[in-house]
Image 1 (cartoon, rainbow, N blue to C red):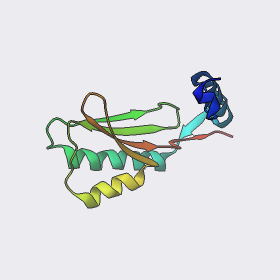
Image 2: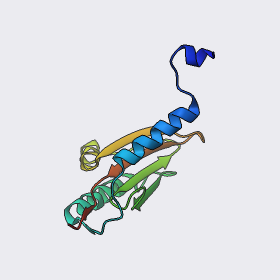
Image 3: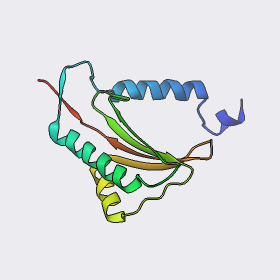
Image 4: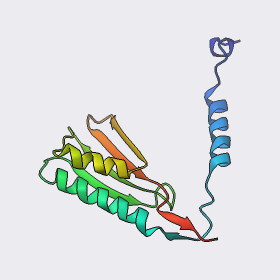
Length: 126
């Protein structure tokens, strides 16, 4: 018996199998027709405008805006650079509060990524 089995650890294959099963259980039915939620979409656009204004003079910083990934009902705004700094913390906080999720993490290439995730940009048609 391996050390991992002795300690009650799962193999990589078993862990992947369990994660796939979990994803199937919580997966959204994205095949149903849906329409854009104008209020939610407007909130994402407002956050993008704020972040663009706060970072427009920062050299080496890349701002992106993406819709429908990984699901049609989601969108994201991403800042990436060697170093991320923004002026106007009051406005930055407003943009972050509009997002459903906010995270900052280092990349293996020495850069830093800051992501703002927006859920429920669409509403399923009943």
